Amino acid sequence: MDNYSKYMKTCFRLARRAEGKTSPNPLVGCIVLDKNGVKISEGYHKKYGENHAERDALLKLDKDAAVDGTLIVNLEPCNHYGKTPPCTDLIIERKLKRVVISSFDTNPVASGGIKKLEKVGIEVIQGVLEEEGNELNEVFFTNISKKRPFIALKTATTIDGKISTSSGDSKWITSEKARKYARKLRKKYDAILTSSSTVIADNPEMKHKTKIIIDRHLKCDLSSQIFKNGNIYIFTQKVPPEVNEYPNIKFIQKDKITIDFILEELFKRKIMSVFVEAGGKLLGSFVKEGYADKIYQFIAPKITNDNSSKSAFDGDNISLIAQSKEFKLVDTKKLYPDVLLTYKQP
Ligand SMILES: NC(=O)c1ccc[n+]([C@@H]2O[C@H](COP(=O)([O-])OP(=O)(O)OC[C@H]3O[C@@H](n4cnc5c(N)ncnc54)[C@H](OP(=O)(O)O)[C@@H]3O)[C@@H](O)[C@H]2O)c1
Image (cartoon, rainbow, N blue to C red; front, side, top):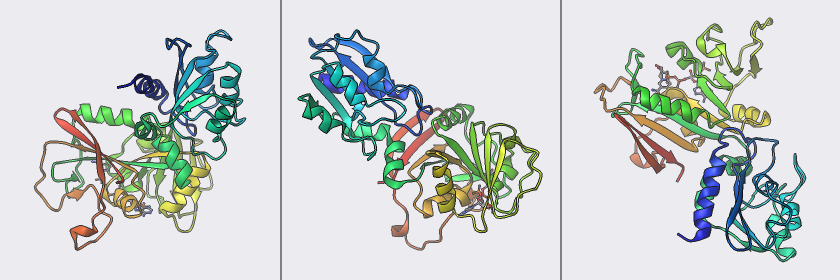
């Protein structure tokens, strides 16, 4: 591995420290080398509204320390006034000689950084570990290209792909270790989303700062565990209660609640990524409508051996295997005795 790739990997690691905290901004890490190629600073974008990674790394240095040096950053430096001034201006002011980038900034508001740097004679090396860089910011790039939140579906199944028995018993399919890991994954996303059916069947708490519940006919008991913490949005087709005794619950009402409408409303509210934890009907609807950007499938070494047990995905009715939706396996993780398989759209 060349030196820039090695440093870029460190940028990815730095960026990941802020997972779950930068939304709607991307994850960015930065390294600064002096004119002799010695690492003199590092930084990352810690939180939405705070300094970008380049600014974080450069402001730790004396004014002349980075002259003729190299700045390595996983995303094209921004070229606009947002919450902070353009990073390109600070790079130019600090007289760096070279900037090394992994991903291009496809956000039309912030892009143009490379052109600006090249215009003043700074050498720009582009596309270092670009695929990995794009993967790191899959949420950000999906938000920009699709103008909707990134959707991750999570399910915990038996070997035969079942999430509960026909009587609805589902506790517990996977081990505490797998469930703990799932709780960790949740935190990376802006919100979790579930259904009235899952709330009624399992009465889960699903701890998270933002929770979305689809309850078209207002069947849920508002004293259920899930409503006890977090900011909650209930999507419903019914007229919400006139007196809302729960200050943390907001009802979003429409005559016909569709997944398209839900995603539009969430995006408007700057909820940029959603972790869907539900049964087969709702996960199946997301798959059918093409909204499964990522799937986390935890599999326990158990077989219900019963076709009437509920399936992890149950949103379609097909006759040919060729009509199945295809996914690409991107990661496997052993969480003994269980396993986690992660899939993405091909
Ligand atoms: N193992 C796991 O990972 C896991 C995770 C969660 C739940 N579960 C189990 O799954 C079972 C529940 O599964 P389920 O299949 O019966 O229910 P589900 O998939 O959790 O939810 C179905 C509900 O989602 C809403 N919905 C579905 N498609 C929709 C669409 N296109 N637009 C709007 N709303 C839509 C509807 O709610 P409304 O009609 O109320 O609006 C529908 O009744 C429970 O037994 C639970 O224990 C297992």
